[in-house]
Length: 171
Image (tube, rainbow, N blue to C red; front, side):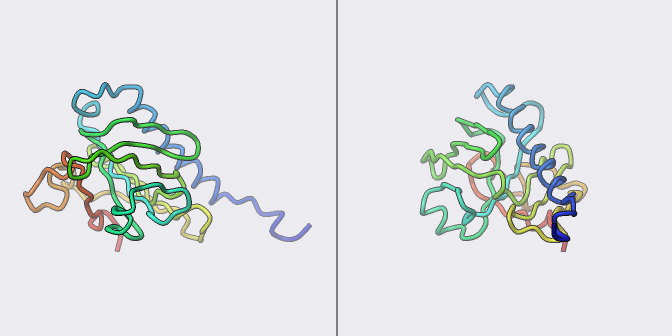
């Protein structure tokens, strides 16, 4: 028995447990979503994932446009939302073209619900470091889903546009 066999990987246990929060949140949306205009209350999810993570299935033009990382917003216009222990699936409209996205839960790097000032940031599964999981608070006052960058332009969550979450990351 080597030294590594004696080590309990609490970091991985915590990472997996918190990824189950993402799965459970999506499951609850599936149970309550009626397809008639959005999630319950003001809830909405920003989900950032690695586009080159094994198992991610997105159209080539989206992978070309967003090499490495992409953020989607689940609030008003989505369909066919599904989740299991390994992946989430959703259909979103990009330039009025519905596209099915399949994202392994291990490929999610950020999950945020700005309506309740909640965010989780993950390291990709399989690339575990000592900073395995970073919980971060979202900045106060940054919970307007229609104005994610504070520019007053609005509408990103309603049109299926991809937005940047750099302001939510710790520098």
